[in-house]
Length: 499
Image (cartoon, rainbow, N blue to C red; front, top):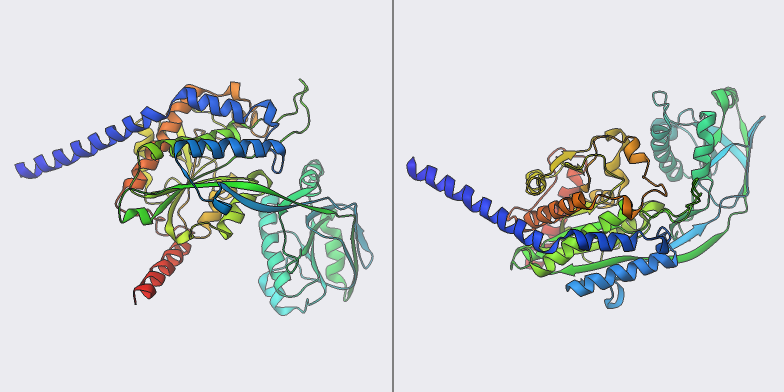
């Protein structure tokens, strides 16, 4: 028994010394002055808010790629560069959408997915448009009209989610397009119209796929829906005019470092963040119109630079892939493109440690969206604790923040992928006063806190990358089965090669 106790004590001391040693390695490269210097550059007025496709975002990309090169990171982009070209398309808002079916018409629209379009023909009303409704109705080449959401859901977020499922059903059934009739509070309509009916930037669409027509039409009291439901036959007109498109490109930044362990180096950890922001917008009372994006997401971007510098100097057992995404603010465009066009097969990626931020209101904490959803929870907790911080899980699950950052595109493929963020305990006024505001400036950030935050992220990264046990999803997570499929296919491919 005495020997057993001594062995346990020795093991604990060994682990403690290892953690202390790792913390010292982290502290030797992650310093406040460097963090401050990077953020002041990336969030400067001169970069004009780093809007996707802008010349200023190209300057930011060159700055980031050159620092990766300086650290010794190897390029993994196109043609031996650090850049992965992301083909994009800017589409102007429609000049007008005219919709009429029988005696009902509406000029209040939200253009969810549109192209120039001229339809005159049969329509079908399917209530709330359930899967069963589509299975029992003939909608081929017809305009499908439904009520937004479900009988149980009245909030716009839920209605939007239900609408995406209906779009898929209508498209798969050969419908000409989908119209959803919706009641929206008058105060909120302008807000949603500003978002959905403005010019849009997206990934370049395939000419073969095209765009499926999907429009929300205002229907106060759902009186129009009631009249259509009572009609025996429906004749519809839908005209969408004035849309123009322009193709352009932006860049993801991609680099790698090989791991030091002969076996574990075949597994990669992704360290990711987006480096774009929302550019220039409406001036405030002080006539400031530049949305500098210090917190969102210069902080996350520099977090990735910090881990790259540290691992380049002190290699980890697993290999590292560093990705800085464009177009996150336009709809996760860079990460969507990368996940579908990876430079190294995704089944070699065993973890994605994303860093994204909206702001902070508690400098004693770090907030991780997905803290308990993967098997490395303890590493994240210990990494924060080593620098005096407490790791907490998502305090605002109603915001669905896990699925609103670049990590989700890897999670959908099966790669365990939480997002590491600055500490906040509620999505409150302290967050919203800088989130996507002109007030998100570099001089308003607490750099003493950031030094601890960055060191916690880098230490956690080292522990995950050096752990002999491969990280994975917690059993029962909604992305668990996707992970099983991703890595099972890898093992089957490896077995096939050996055979």
